[in-house]
Amino acid sequence: MELLDRITINSDICHGKPTIRGLRYPVENMLELMASGMSHEEILDDYEDLEKEDLWACLLFAARLTRSKGSYPLDLVA
Image (tube, rainbow, N blue to C red; front, side, top):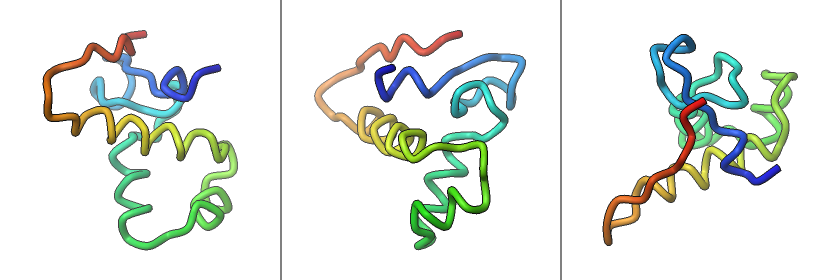
């Protein structure tokens, strides 16, 4: 599984926001937790159904969104 395959978009889950593996964990929430200073280990302890690769996928997703040389399709629609 590629990292970005872990990020899914489904209009029936979290109002179509990007989430982790179709679970109800929006990418933006995980990014906010990391930005607040929580370590990956702390997040994984709080959200036992997440895997470390899910957090790396969130970071990669955010990095791809900030590319400034153009738009790139992420092909994430489930």
